[in-house]
Image 1: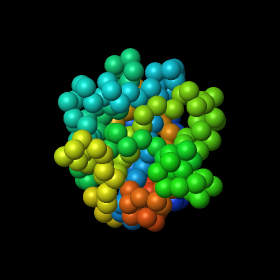
Image 2: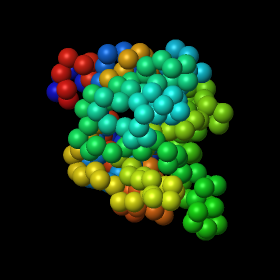
Image 3: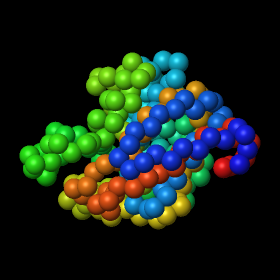
Image 4: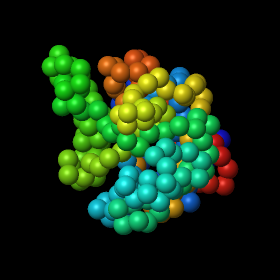
Length: 206
């Protein structure tokens, strides 16, 4: 591993953030398999410019992300490109769990459970971001098929230990991550686990 590579293991249920410079690579490794990684991206110099699910999905004509997918902003500028993907299925529609959505879906007894929205708000506050800055996010490794009747399912993930997705920053980007704490549906195999975040300078893959 080169001196220009930094690696952080993000514990189960925890938040993480970093600025990834243009041309650098961000590798997200699912260490134990079936762990959803909720993800938001912003222009590091102007956070009003941020990942846009509608722009991204319209441009690529696909609701799932994989190798070659370009993450577009609300200004239709390129933020990041998926340059490698060993899983092959990543969700753009399922959103981030919250205390409110947990209560609605699974009952009031879940209100005290930690959620991705909490992680995003806590981590985003370090950069002056608040509730109005949270938009529809990407869920790396989460398996959300569209059923025949048009509804969305949340089913067992397709990921396995050691699978990874590698993104190249097309501009300086601020990344917020919630290593999803959800235990009420199978998006994490009902047991959240750690993931690894690696930033490298792009001259060699970590």
